[in-house]
Image (cartoon, rainbow over all chains, first blue to last red; front, top):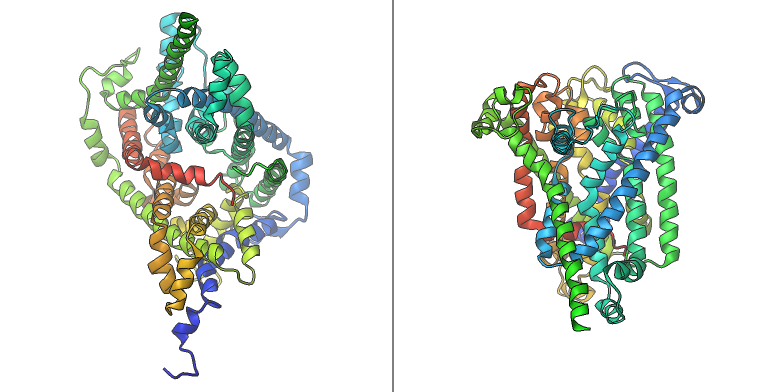
Length: 300
Length: 296
């Protein structure tokens, strides 16, 4: 090695060059599996394409079709919001109350673990387990209702309550994750607030209303919004549990466009639908980011 | 006053544990229902009304899953794919996370906001384009130079692994962990003449070992349970199906009630091992979830 020329090895591991090598893999894969596909999908959304022949340019035709002609697209968006609002409205309060109780109980590790089990269970198993539990005649729930003499609803086969059933399963599934976030928040709450309130004679419900909720507000907002966003883009549960039925009562936009793409091979329309739903989700995400920056919620 | 206080505290205590126990039953009962369902005979399954408690638990159903269903292949695929993705994501996340935490270079701020921004994009937007881009990879899977004629990469493990080589969340997570490595240690190594890669592998990486474990377990469980993408790719390639996807795509050929026990046994096998992993390594997994909600 001469003193003037630097060897290639040294040059590569110099402070000037090494950082680029460290980030090279994520740039390569990011271009191939993120930026590239995004652009490709944008192009496809402006064409009529079945995945085999040549795409035919239709401009904004697919977006117009979804907005004007397609009777079901708007309904699928409504279903998506119904599901998102429903699963958040059921799941987040349930998780908050459970976390608040766990935080003030013994054997915390045990309770936590029990509630976390669905969190590590694959979606196929969750959907099938509940398909069996909610089955019309042989299902555990209707057997139990039958024993007590209560009416046995068709949880998954009646269009009027199928979405409600999906919402309940989704809430059950995400309970553990939300409990975890709330417990993390609760552990950061200064215990002296509780002691002071107890000395003042507050009961458990008052403690929850006047101490836990206000102190946990940033976490609650965070969980509400991120759960809502996640629910807007999820469709695997409906795909496996109800296949979007009965009579498309549980077809959310994600599922609608997935079928459009991989069953009907209408890739242009499906890509356009994907961009519309993504635009909605990204808008809400950006609002959330601004909200939290301004609120000074640095812990989350 | 003293009696008053104890009454006030004891009632909620009983109520509290009653509520937690009721909730626990709600969480566990569906899983028990799954196990009971796996232990019935076909006759019990078909009886009207269906027999709920199996007379003699058919533990043999778990063995039959391996002879009557392609369970071995599903398990192999699940393990190969999940381990490959986990290894790849650890490497890519650690390298990029380190660079974004410890260097300022042209474009580093842009890249960091890219990493944060990319996490906001929903996955369904990428499914369609990635599927077709993989199909049109030239000279792979029977394709010509222009990417036409064959199936491209869709018929290989690559299709299941490569799209998940990078996790934006993981890059961000590792950056958080590397931020806690003191600059002084790195500067001292530089003064001693160590190259940047030496510093990375022998000084920085060992210091974030808990972070690597967190990311690894988190990714492993997540990818073991991945369904949507794998299902999309392997609908036409049964030899590549992973455990959950294989169970799901069985339904057409396998849906009558007499074989439902086998299906449920297969579901048990897809769930129980991962639960054991989780129970053993809980604390790492949990850190992966909570660290992500903390913005740096």
